Length: 251
Ligand SMILES: O=C[C@H](O)COP(=O)(O)O
Image (cartoon, rainbow, N blue to C red; front, side, top):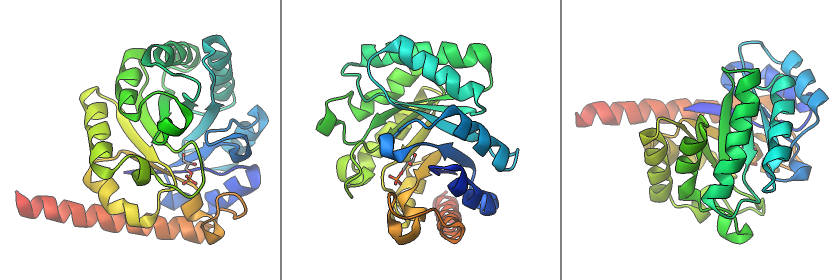
């Protein structure tokens, strides 16, 4: 499982860089503009320059409306700025057809510019609170649009978590559908170290985290701490070892 960490500024990304050996993807966002709020192009560029070249930079394009042209242009901005994971939060899409429309535009805009960049179609575990597409529709939306990954995060950061809205067995079905479609499955939403056993067991490819690696567990007032990133990674590695041992004992 890969660890994606979301700094909100160049300063925080520099703290991520201090823990670079413990993380896999640096995800640029602007949390004060929403769960998948988009940051400025120059921030993406500066963060790309600040972190080791072997660590991919991801950028969120926003909690987007159903405006395929606008979103495709924003996604191009993210990839031109140096991100190679382009994450789109399908906030304003109320049907899978609308979501596929948006993501097809993004895939074309991104891959015409940089064919090796990965496009991530993100829905929300708490979709019922905001009226957007159902979490389990995401793998098919990602497949139909030519995206590379399906993701879930939470839209409302009020302390409720991924598993509060989409229980582990439903997340397992999400991962199963994503893999069946040949996609990566990414999960986030106030994930804590205590969720890692389940996330590992169900075969999650990427776990996205912010609050759990911020001081005081506070994604807004706290700042990402390198030692918390290292501790979270140690827990991930422990669960990976335990899971591998259990699988081999059962076979
Ligand atoms: O993509 C990951 C998100 O930034 C997760 O943030 P969170 O762990 O604070 O919900």
